[in-house]
Length: 252
Image (cartoon, rainbow, N blue to C red; front, side):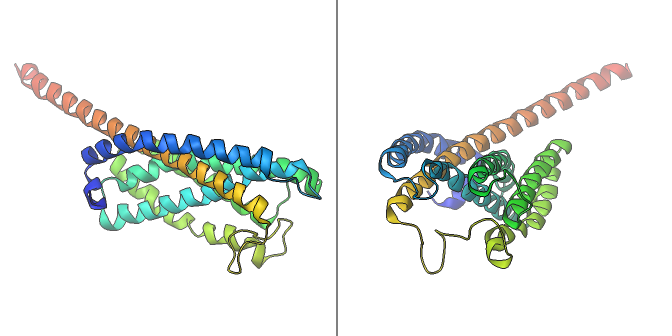
């Protein structure tokens, strides 16, 4: 099946229904391996001790917070340019998931920062830009709930999403552009990762597990949104039919 075929919501429901059980199985295996590597193989840091374990939750959550918004930005282009019937469905379904991962990133970062930096929060460039990302997610969710027509809501949210996408490179390069309390990137670098393989591999496995979890939640949320829109269409058709019957009776 070509990807373009999934533009049909019915085909998407069929395909995603077959794919989800495989994704759930792979996610369970990935989490089992990742948690084993995290707690029984990866060593404690010589300075941070066991508190470094929170990194295996914090870093994947931070990566997914940005990846989720990137998917929303691409979906917004699909809504405004190609008018793909599932593009705004994808963006709307991704927003609450992205907000959740961003909140997890902020909370775990604060809990990690207290023993390392001596404070839960500073108005650091990285922390502040991630907080802005969380606010963007909340604003988009509110916008979708405010406008009843899903087509109009999708277009308005697509414009706002693309405007907010300028925050993504700010988050990524904030530790390079400004003097910041947050440590510089140590995994995604042009010259390669700077952390030891014994820590890097468990981190990558956990990132893969969280990515699978995101895909599962996103597909399930998209399926719910497609079904919700079909139900709304049926309700509108039923209401129109009732009006059509009632009008002649009222005239009599």
